[in-house]
Length: 328
Ligand SMILES: [Mn+2]
Image (cartoon, rainbow, N blue to C red; front, side, top):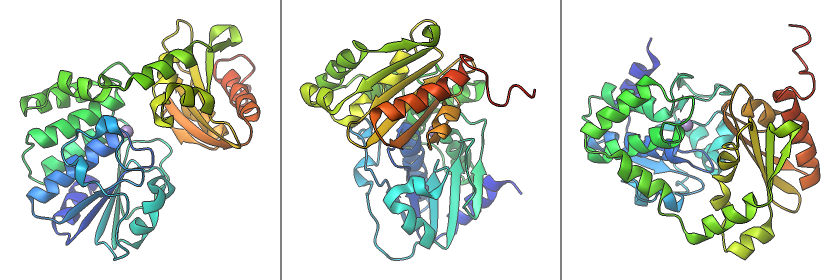
């Protein structure tokens, strides 16, 4: 049975749907979640879109974003749909509401998905879950209007880095073309997501990039983001989210990492290319993600987090022998 058809049937006949984004929501989970919400409302299915961490300012333009809730009443929902939550923990404070649902649907494209849902649409070849939701909306028989198109295009553009990452496929480009025919525009979404930044974001970028370090013959780049830097620039922690991707643009760098925090908890963002695996490094640190983009929250000091991450990074770029390569 095609899971997407079964999911469409379940959603159509549902009395109440709760769509849940992952913690630290991005353009894919919010765009895909809001698109599905708009489509279900067109079918008169009562639907709530929820995100434990709310909506970041750069995604507040998404149609329906103003109605996103951060918590839901204790009442049992009929169907809960998680948007790229590889484990239920990724739903954050909303995990309990999902657990209470009569039917749990999971839509994910992460390799590290641990099945927990009654119905699972797991597509490792999708550049964004927005691609899966586009198919699902098609299966629901809803015609994509401009609002839905803007949401889905945002999902595809943000997860492919505006068609720059290795996950950019003909399928992603074809979907984007279709969405443009429905009234969404690539340049408008790019401007709204990436080119309306507060000055503090660029001040922070400048300060952090000024102090990056290269390791292992230039194959690994790291930078530290301290609470002091954020304070001096007047920046919020989430404004540091693009810096690891920026480090990856240095010639020769295959793995880039930023370490954010002071105190006893360090947020590690990892970006990679040319065969180095960000998700493997992240898993060593207790986190997860995609081959090219991953992250972890490490309990411990900054020094300890950096030591562990650099050790794992060395294996990825071949600076020391790979644990399981000796047997191959
Ligand atoms: Mn995604």
